[in-house]
Image 1: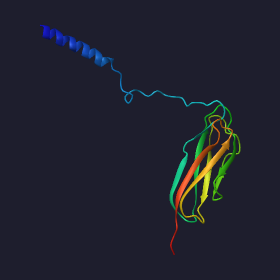
Image 2: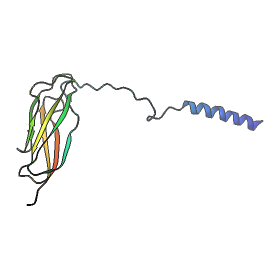
Image 3: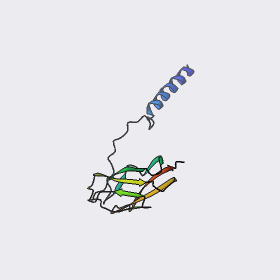
Image 4: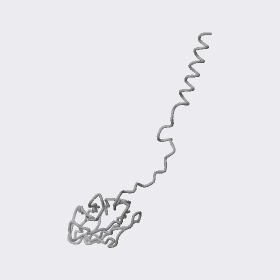
Length: 145
């Protein structure tokens, strides 16, 4: 009889403990989180790096970086600087309003270049976090005649 009572007690407490457990984070329903709005103008890049892979010497390649003003005030891009004359950019000259998405296009001219290339593009703006940077890279293949 003692054994039966003891088994029943373990069953009751074991069942209660099992129901008290919470689901692991991987099984929990994800909460919907609103994007965080930063006080002042802010730039949030969708991507910071782009690799063109292998290209031929003389090719001109371009990539567009997209960004959003996730701040509470208009974002103004004051200047965009590149590390060499082989890289040109096109960017918005007007203010990007809060929540608005815009883009910066980087064009790389591989004429006279060979081998691995890494270029830094610095975006100077009124963003609260200061200047932002994006990076392009490629490997220039030379042809043997």
